[in-house]
Length: 150
Image (cartoon, rainbow, N blue to C red; front, top):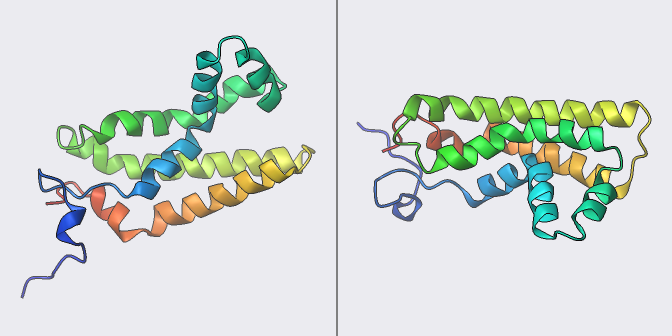
């Protein structure tokens, strides 16, 4: 007896691959938030420096903040080519989980070392914990990263 997949036909694209859940894109944006800020600052030319200074008063923290977003940026690029590089794609969920753990540890260390716990910091911490739990437990996301999700 063949085990049925718990997904609806609408969950698959025209190539027979599972569509990535909408929340996945939100998690990628959360992980790449410094990159999003960087692009937004570049798009608003005159206010860009003020925008960066508002969120990152220490410019060194901004450049360090770009590092944990690199796996998310690469995941954006890989998502359209997951059929072309199935082994890399199937390993990338682990990379995203490791990046999320790194982001969480970095945030916790910043709070422990004396950074003021603002509402934004607390909200990001809660979102990051939720994103990590979702990356670890969502069955559809896990199935999307299997080498052959047909």
